Amino acid sequence: MRLGAGIGVLMTRPPNGIRVAERRRAMPKFITIGYGDQAGYDRTPVHIRETAHAADAKRTEAGDVMGVAGSPVQVRNAEAKGTEVIPGAFLSADLPIAGFALVEAADLDEAISIAAQSPCAVAHGVVEIWPLEQVNVV
Image (cartoon, rainbow, N blue to C red):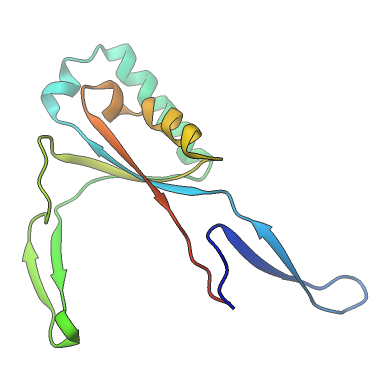
């Protein structure tokens, strides 16, 4: 059975011992990609940067996953005939990728509000928000 994005099935066992499938709507998730450079960060007033880092800390305490971007590699395995690994990013942008996050938000508007408070957004960078359309197969 294939379920739509954001819907999961929870098997519960009530006191009578009969298992019951119950549908629950999961909180939508969004992938954010933060772009920014040291020059933009450095020219942003310290109190604004500190406020943005505090907002990120609250999000991680609430369960969001955030991290600084490391060095990427590209992986290809065309037709499952052999893995090819190439150092470096596949895409390029005007600003380097600074970090990623997996954010739970009620909708895109809330995800935008969250991203707008991030260090990349306030420090002359850009944050992309990608809705993560989960597919649960049961």
